[in-house]
Length: 326
Image: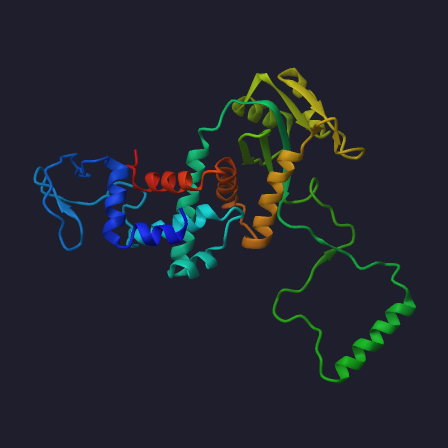
């Protein structure tokens, strides 16, 4: 549901409260404390008082929104904007869109990400052709200047720089953001970047998780948890950690140093999912802390698995926001 539809369908805070009550209790609104249905008319703050327990009750009581002071209508807009952004959006952008402070936008976004992560726990029994691969989150270092940079070209550039400096131009980077480089930069495996492992069923769902160490035991546990081994064939690259997968599942691999696809044997589906994550992080978030990375990955997994169900995502997230916490 997009923001225009929300504006038309829920023009006031009361409309949002009534819709949330239907999501939580159905046709008959109940007391959030005792479950009673004998409620007085709404007060000025749009809450009910329960005649059974004499408490003031609201739809957000004992839910993830229990202590929120943010209007429900603002939450409706936030959920719509977040679920509609395939590659995510920054907390600063959300702040501007719903007119709240940055800390508020940041906390709202992570609250919704946590609910997405919870929803992802139901993923299991991927089957058929399933692809498994890993990516590394943390950016790519710049290469060192070419040591064979020709002296003549260097002298020409030095002369041009000196002339421009003489005219008052300053090329020294401002602030602390000076470009860094490594003589022989490594990329992917062998770096300090954080590994994320994913499994995707072709044409179906994906699952991904941050993995501290890429090892056969960790990869095997992930396959056993999410894949129906008896009804699947696993496609991977030639990483040695995958070599023993044939013990638990039909396994076929491609050597990416020689080719990427042969007669349909490839990892294009999982690579496409990595592209969404990488573009989201580079284009929207720019950098992600190791502590928060699982939440960001969960967001991308949830959106990929519901990529054709925008209205479902909106209602699903709202329902989780107003459902009681166990």
